[in-house]
Amino acid sequence: MSISLKTHKILWGKSGNRCSFPDCKVELVMDESESDNPSVVGQEAHIVGKKIKGPRGNSSMPIEDRDKYDNLILLCSIHHKLIDDQPNNYTVVKLTEFKKNHEEWVSKNLSIDKQKQKIELEYAHIIDKWVELGRVSEWKTWASNLLCSGQPSIRKEVYEKLRELQEFIFTRHWSGEIEEIEHALRNFNNVLNDFFIVFDKHKVKEDNWYDTERFYKTSFFEQHVYYRLLNEFNYHVDLTEDLVLELTRAGNRIIRAVRNNLFSTFRNDEGVLIIEYGPTMDLSWKTVRTEYLNYKEKEEFNYINLKDFMTRRKTRSYHFGEGESLKYLSERFNM
Image (cartoon, rainbow, N blue to C red):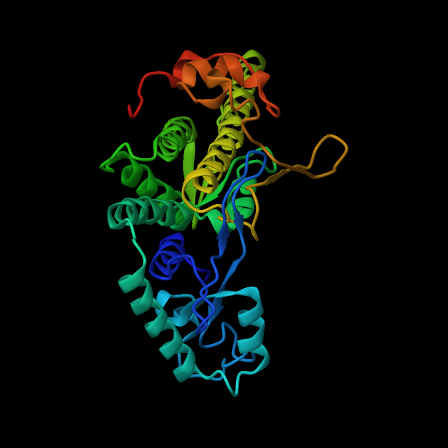
């Protein structure tokens, strides 16, 4: 488990972006300059240690609760190091009191834009659901399963969570306050919708997996029929895999939008979404980073629809196939 985006926003908001150590109150976000983005120098410290063997970690508090708001205190790097170097002096009780007193001071002495905080928390909640339902922490594993062995496969549990995510994004009340995040989420959902249309066309259930049916294998054997079906199968696999690459680009667009507008250190430790595929013709495996590169080019930055993507996918940084097929264009979950 890790600290949720909503928890990050609550902690920083209630702390006034200042160190909670008594008599410090140093600002933890340096203003941006003409040439640089804002610099974040604050650190989110655990009151009860994140790990059992960490500072103040020998506690009855469940591990899954240790990344929650009540167990976090915002500090500068100096005081974070101090409390962790001296856990016997800076106890759980003392740090809890530091946090309580500091947040009371912030409430009385700083002007906080509560409407802005409310809006940002609403967006943070949506992003946290995207992370959860999209299995973002497991992205490389589940997405790579769709690109390996020439037969796209996905765990049933992941598939169902993605279906839940599809409906969740589709039914949001958009305020229009942070347009870049909203556009990125809509773009992601448009790709996800079309992924389901394509993948489901030849989806078969095998135990706890959904596999791609090898529909070219038929008891009725005629060579010309076999090769026609094999070509259709290869096209289907390539299109499915290209949509997975596009979904990864769309996911990285969401990460970029969150970092630009909501929390500049979002996924600092985890980084961008990457994907692995193989084995290739030389039996190697490739790990690739797929993103929309021309952010100023609106056409590349947006996924328009499946028909457009079939034609334009060959212009992307990575792709497996090309060409159109009308068989996939009969339905679409419009956004």
